[in-house]
Image (tube, rainbow, N blue to C red; front, side):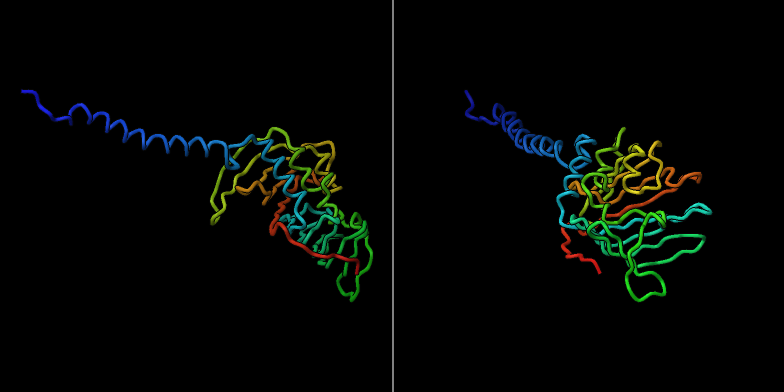
Length: 240
């Protein structure tokens, strides 16, 4: 007698259907994620995207620091403030000159730099080059500023990824030509290469850059750490 049961022939078909229902979404997920995220893109293209973001933002909080300068070197120890694309800067700096460190409030705008030096009650015009420091407003220039370091970098290689809260940070190591570094910090050797590490968010925004090399003539290599935060900051900076 012929059986009317159908489960043996259809069971493999149901199993295959169930497996297909599972595999297809996974494949779609894998296909979508393979082309997204900072860590998946071409490293040079990712740094170029980060430059575009920095050049496009209205303003950003910039931090620049080094733990220590070589003995006898006059230079910049620390800077923190808001930079805009006027270009302009409003913040504070700490410099070392003649073995003495000094903090000063600084405003840089329209090609001039004003500082409220220690023991003074008003801003005076200064030449930051006298202190081995750059014009802080120039940090925001899209040609020769911080963003130019990203596209000047060579031998770019992806590094580690870490999670910071909801943000994924990706690092890239690179070699940065001295000419690009000297445009940001004029005391740097324009003929030497600098070791660089760039840390980007998963939105391809530069969060941190670390540069090491001959920033000052006849002195050991110095490491500067540059941080960027609060993209989209808006501030009207005027001369004091």
